[in-house]
Image (cartoon, rainbow, N blue to C red):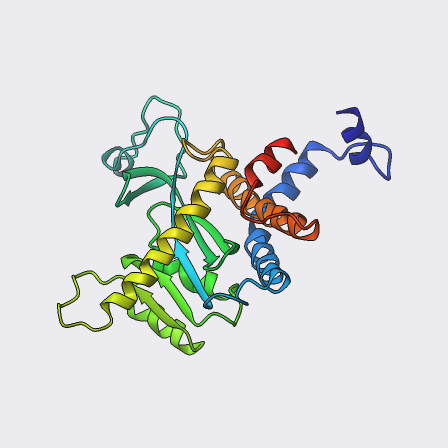
Length: 260
């Protein structure tokens, strides 16, 4: 701690005021999505992610549970706060696996290749629809991908049009089962399997490494954005460091970060 204080005090010999820290930290979340996108594009070029694999990007939006109690919709509509500790800025969202979750939604785009690199990330309340945030993430994705893989929540005309403008094909599960005579169903099944593998692997690694399996350790939108998006950025820096030192990118990352 003494060494850290000495570094922070340079070059003026004294620590910044607490209000200065609060003001600067409040500006960090707005800059993180662009920094994640910039570093993601650099990593793709650095490691040659698509040299031996198809050029595809997987979209996902895992939900993160807010700490404390919950604020039920009827209480929220009546402006009746429960007598428990809760995060008033979080909101309800429904997950096909976990059901209703009061918290946040991490919108994530990742490389579908031998190494799972985050390319774009954003954090919103859990009630925000994934398709409304996807165009913002699309701007951070490299121009190389030909395919964008998503689930049913990305099956919207607007997103199809946005992908077509950049020469990409959106492959997302339909809201109704495909007819038996659909010749493209086996190909889409392979794409959906690749998306699930990419998303589940990356989500599990990030949530396990940064303690996001239970509830997020922060309250408030800015604090949660700074923590979660900062975790994505640290994970990207870890991949960069391991590549520069000729270490495996998909093996030993958990032990490496925990040892650090």
